[in-house]
Every structure is written in structure tokens, then in C-alpha cells.
Image 1 (tube, protein in one colour):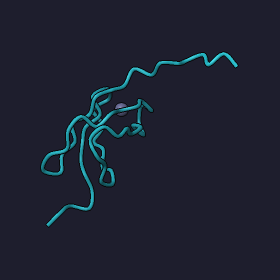
Image 2: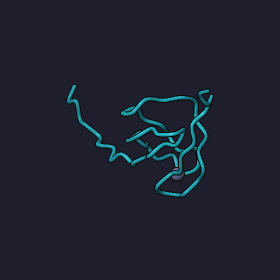
Image 3: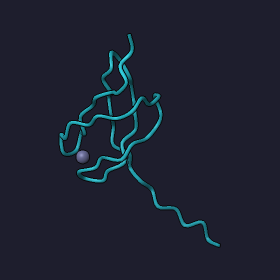
Image 4: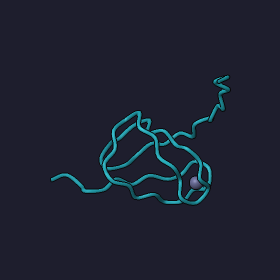
Length: 61
Ligand SMILES: [Zn+2]
């Protein structure tokens, strides 16, 4: 049996997140604090999430 959704907790606002299956290395957005979170680990239907420092890049058109 595999679960249809995965659960994790936002490291910033501690909101419980239920998301469709994702793979390690993918990113999510927390619906509460809008932070970008990267999936560090997926184990037993639980996600380990780490906030991503969003670096704004000037591509200098
Ligand atoms: Zn959050």
C-alpha cells in the first residue's frame, strides 16, 4: 500500500502540510507563509522540509 498524499510540517510556521506525492529535491510553497520549501527526505509518508533561501538574480537583460 502506498499513501496517496504525503504529510509534512512547515519549518517556518509549523503548519501541517498535506501534499500530493513529491520526490526528494522538489520544492513546495507553504500556503500559510508562502515560503518556498525543498523536500529533503521522504520517508514513510512523511516529508522533511527545509526552507529555501530564494536568491533574486539579476539576469541583466
Ligand atoms: Zn509555512
